[in-house]
Amino acid sequence: MTTAQVALAWLLHQENVIVIPKSSRIDHIEQNRAALDLHLSAEELKALDTAFPPPIQPTPLEML
Image (cartoon, rainbow, N blue to C red; front, side, top):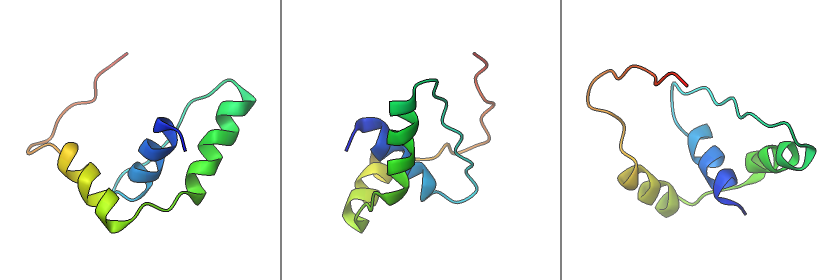
């Protein structure tokens, strides 16, 4: 699994989060799709939640 796949799989477990990955290469699209089949354990999800806690207050999205 790639770092991007783990990130997508973790985001897909979050409530009230919409995940729209961007890709212009077929191999990246295939990797993004494979993230749907990635099963993170409760322990892995907890570790990610601890490392990346949600903001305490509303935070505006950063514009690119």
